[in-house]
Image (cartoon, rainbow, N blue to C red):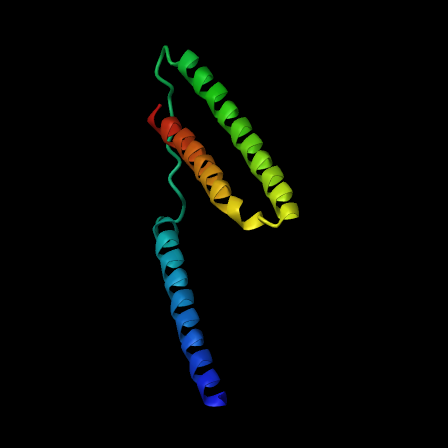
Length: 117
């Protein structure tokens, strides 16, 4: 029994060590171009003429998406609380995943639209 446990624990330690090494390598690789240049680039952005209204609409849209995501998370949390009381708590994790996915999409779309304008 102890031998099995030790073998399994050694396998888990090797996997964790490999994952940690991979994360450190990726982190160092991503940070090295900025370190090699000595500083991060600081480009100057100039907004094209006539796009002030578009950026205002995009700002309103971003706030609306943030508000709706917050409401969605609160609604799913309330549903989880009620279902947990009934003994069905784990069934709403899928809904929480969908709402969090929508939050990530909303946040990413704002960044993509902001970089294009």
